[in-house]
Structures are given as C-alpha cells and as structure tokens.
Length: 76
Image 1 (cartoon, one colour):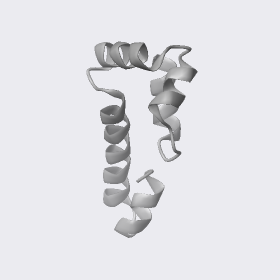
Image 2 (cartoon, one colour; image 1 turned 90 degrees about the vertical axis):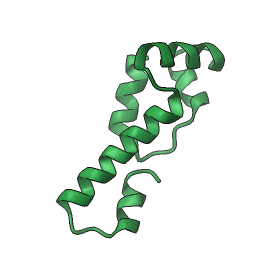
Image 3 (tube, helix red, strand yellow; image 1 turned 30 degrees about the vertical axis):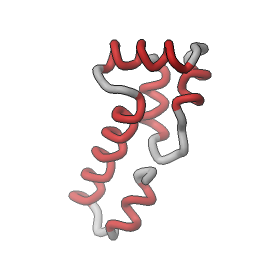
Image 4 (cartoon, helix red, strand yellow; image 1 turned 120 degrees about the vertical axis):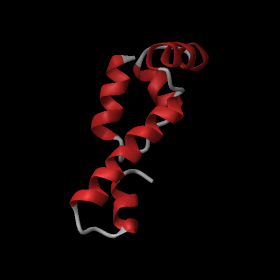
C-alpha cells in the first residue's frame, strides 16, 4: 500500500484506478480497499482527490497558470 501511495504522490496527474492500485499491490480490489482505508484513513478515491487538490492549491498559489491549465496539470 505504501508503494501505491508513493505512486499516487509522484504520478497524480496520470489516470489511475482502484483496479490499477489493487494490481500494483497484488491484492483483490475489495481487500485492497479495506486495507487502504485502514492504513491511510481515506478510501482510494478520497486519497487520490486529496493529493490532486493539494497539487492544484500549490499551483494556484505559486504560478500564473489559469484554472483550466492547473486542472489539467493536477489530473482533473
């Protein structure tokens, strides 16, 4: 699960599904979901959204990019 979190943090702008995450962790989707929530406190989609939102916030504060450009860069 830590590898999945690292992957999300490094590649948040790329499409990445629960199925992809479970395969990366060599687990079945349902079991992965339960373990992910138990270890992170977030379900998979919440965690991915949080990482993307934080990235967008950083870009909004530190760059002159438009909201549309930032949305594209942050995986939205």
